[in-house]
Every structure is written in C-alpha cells, then in structure tokens.
Amino acid sequence: LTCLPHPPPGGGAWTEALALYLPLCQCAQGSYLASNTATICTQCEGSCGAGQELCPAGSVQDGVCAVCQAGTFSFNSSCIPCAPGSYQSMSGTSTCMTCSEGKTTISEASTSATQCVCEAGRYIAPGGTFLLVGGQEVSAFSRARLRSPQDVAVSPDGTFVIIADTQGH
Image 1 (cartoon, helix red, strand yellow):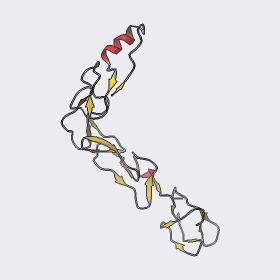
Image 2 (cartoon, rainbow, N blue to C red):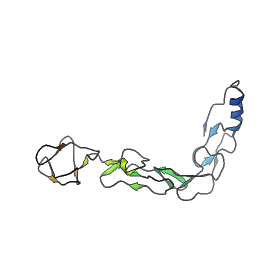
Image 3 (cartoon, rainbow, N blue to C red):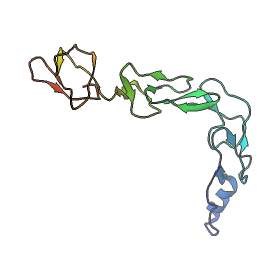
C-alpha cells in the first residue's frame, strides 16, 4: 500500500474537493482499494483472459482486467516483464519472443527484435571472410567468440579490424 500525503488544510476548495474523490492510497497489482479513505488493500478474486492482468496497480474495485503492454506477457493474471534475451512487440500476449542465437537484450521488458544485440564477446561479420588472430577463418554473418582485447578479427587484406563489437557491426 502506497499512500500520498493528505492535502494541507487551506489548499483551496479545489484541492480539498479533489481529496474527497481521489484515493489517498494505491494498492499494488492484484489488489484494490475498496474506498478512497481505505488504508488496507483487498485481494482481487477471479481471473482475466489471456494477455491480461487482474487488478492492475491503482485499482479501486475487484474484477478490473487490463491488457498487458508490449514488453510484457501475462502469467497467472499478472503482466510480467520479458526477461533479458527476449522481447514482445505486441500488447495482450502470453509469451515473449526469444532473441536469435548469440543475441540478448540490454534490459528486461524489451519491445522489439531490434533491441536484441550481440552477447558480450560475440560479433556478426558484416561481409566477406575474416581471420581471427591465430588463423581461424570466420565467414560472413557467422558468429565467433572474441575475448577482447586478446582476440581481434582482421579482414584477409588486413584493412578491417573488429574488436568485440557487441552491436553486430
């Protein structure tokens, strides 16, 4: 339960009138505030459809269902942020999409595949064939392990060098 301070006396008729109609406290997801003067939260009952959560934070009545936003998925009537390494671009879903092999997201609740970047120590060769120090060849668009700064990818003619580019460049 998170409560706001009561408006100070003498704040004007508008402030005092507003305090009569707006709840002074807000409940977390899964519970609701039965009245605007209640100081305890009541657990919500029931369930919602796929892609929705029951009683989002700030609910003032039981049975309120809200669509889970992009970057989240629904599980047990709650919206859960997509974990690092996954994303969801659509609202109202019950799963997250996984980034392709060797890629992850910087944080949770990602909303697009474009937020999937190379994992630390990996890169995607932008074209041609490259040689890793030590002679290992790496073809275009394949992935190679780099332990920067010890490993470097160098183009066969020696003009192009990549040192642990985590953005896939």
